Amino acid sequence: MDDIILECDNLVKIYKTDETEVMALQGLELSIKKGELMAIIGKSGSGKSTLLNIIGGLEKTTAGKVLFKDRDISTFTEKEMIEYRKHNIGFVWQKSILNLLPYLTVIQNLEMNGTMNGMSRARACEKGLELLEQVGLSERTDSYPTQLSGGEQQRAAIAVSLMNEPEIILADEPTGAVDERTKDRIQELFRNLNRKLGITIIIVTHDVSLADKVDRVVMISDGKISTERILKEEYRLKLDELEGYNFEDLKRQGKDSHDEYQLLDRAGRVKLSEDMLKAAGINSNRVKISVVDKKIVISYEEDEEDEQI
Image (cartoon, rainbow, N blue to C red; front, side, top):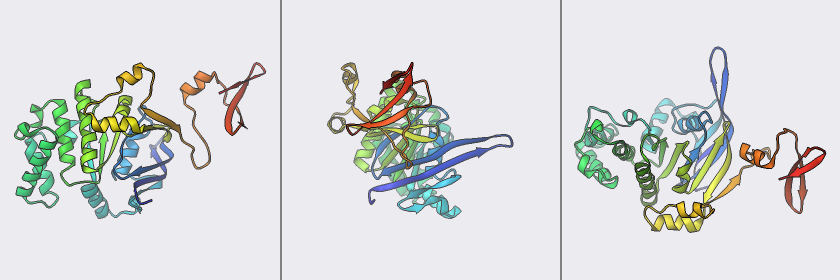
């Protein structure tokens, strides 16, 4: 489809040591549209950072493929992969040292990024100043990273990631080391950049509160996508119209801003979460499945009686 910018097709990633093999991704499938603002969430070890690294061209898959505009990036030569990362992908990492060189000022970090990719120094400086204004750091151009707060460091990192006008921003736990107020500002900044520039933004995190600020939330579990949450249209409009809008009142009323979907894989399998199984009282790995009035009913036997969910 024309609006799909990334397609993950049956991704498998196995990490091998002399003694063990760990399967980080197990046939993962995911399509990402151009201009999406989305989060990939999951527990530690679920495979979300591995997925980010593969999309960013930092790791190769064991099997399966990632299509960027219908091109399989696993077939790229070393030179093509460098060009892919340089011109199409912007990275924002949790640790400041991975985003900013500590011995350069903020504007020098942006200038260096631009000149290394073919810009004149004058143009890199001009563009860097424009980006710092966009992220609210116009007053901190000559500061060193150690002189910035955690939130300011992340905003500077976002500015650096935008220098080469990438089509995709990959952010790995960008709010993991900041307080709640700063977290909200960074989330709002991502949303504004997504809306104004049309950049595809993929945020990998374990922080479920990000669901309030993105249009699509993908849950990864055991190396596969298990559920998706899609922002309801009425609330998407409120986020776009009202800066800083949040859904705390909705939560207190027992309402949800997103619709949640379970995903079927190519073999027709669906994963039931531990919470669902617990709520239904299912403690067996054997269940019965039937179709009743066009609804799929899962039941199991306990004390010779069927319990239905």
